[in-house]
Image (tube, rainbow, N blue to C red; front, side):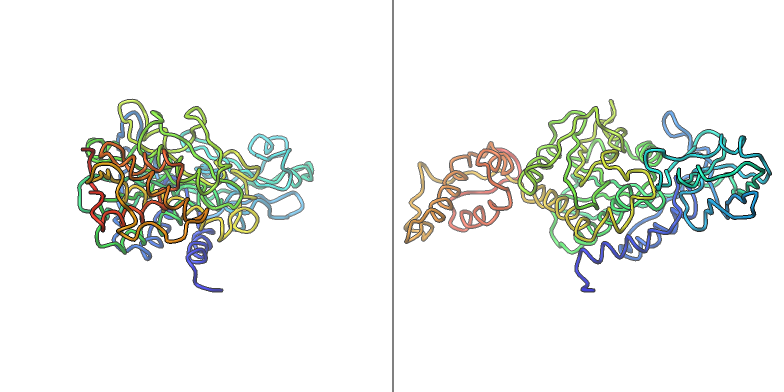
Amino acid sequence: MQNTLSNQIYNLAKKLWPINRSITGDGVRKTLSIIKEKIPELKIFEIPSGTEVFDWTVPKEWKVRDAYIITPDGEKICQFKKNNLHLVGYSSPINLKIPLSKLQDHLYSLPNQPDAIPYITSYYEKRWGFCITHDERQSLTDGDYQVYIDTELFDGSLSYGEILIKGQTSEEIFISTYICHPSMANNELSGPCVTTFLAKKLKEFKKLKYSYRLIFIPETIGSITYLSQNIEHLKQNVVAGFNVTCVGDDRDYSYLPSRKGNTLSDQIAKHVLKHICPTFKSYKWADRGSDERQYCAPNVDLPIASIMRTKYGMYDEYHTSLDDLINVVTAKGLEGGFNALWKAIEALERNSYPKVTILCEPQLGKRDLYPALLTEHTNSKVMQMLNLITWSDGAHSLIDIAELCDSPIWELYPIVKKLEDHKLIEVHNEPS
């Protein structure tokens, strides 16, 4: 297999796939340590259980050693070591024999997806349970079942990772992804894998306009914890950003706005998706469901939007064992998610306020900017250049101009460079 970018991202996903992750615990730490192998500058933080974070409290740490059920016939089922989705997240320890009628109260299955193991958690309420395919649940016979869950809940810590890649300014682009779901490929394994390679690519650039802050956190409690420690800095410095999740399938592209809906992140996300996939799905703030809820909450209001492939909750395999690395997430899908986000980052970096330096339209011919032979194609290119020039008044940004010209912003980059080289425009970082 060629070592292409898509395969590199996919191979990282395969390596992280079997790890049992939750909102706390060794699975999160192991995941962060593997990501740190790719981006050694990643700093890992531990926030103690019991720490108050706004209206929440960092929970106890959860450790799993084993879990299974033994049927009346002696068969071992719902084995955690075979599929970590079998155990309800944060299950309390238990070792007892109960009849099937009592066991049913602790079993979870999906009648409409009889061959899928559902993903169920109980982070903040003490309980135990198992997830099972509905077909297998229907086949259970009356009798006594031995239930064994070897877990531990204790005062430990919540772990998260952060990398800051400094640019020429203190203004920051904030990129967040979560690392708390076990063995589901689009939600959420695709997010940290793509984000890892975004960080690797950003590190290759010697001159970035913005600084980039990328974090790998548990969903909800992780973003709340991170905000509780960094909110003032983020509010003062973050000018744009993206929540990265569900970026690995090869079915669709999706956009979820910030709460305000009119930030630079929103403008760029919609622009990029319109030009790489005109049929992309555009959602409303009412459709939110991930960490954008925290980043865009009232009195926080960071400019965070989401660029996704198929949105969470909008594909049949979501939150089940069917969300896998074979039928749902592909190397091509991961690369598509990466490319969409990278085009957005590149648009942020190369966005500017061009301003013409002459009066009226320039004489393009004497500068060899006008084609010797005018065809439909070359005429289109000339009009693209003239359209860029006509909107280069210092008040419109390049992303504004791209929208006005109905042109992908990346097609304007070489034109800006050419006009700048001929001293027909000046490029400014702020409107003038």
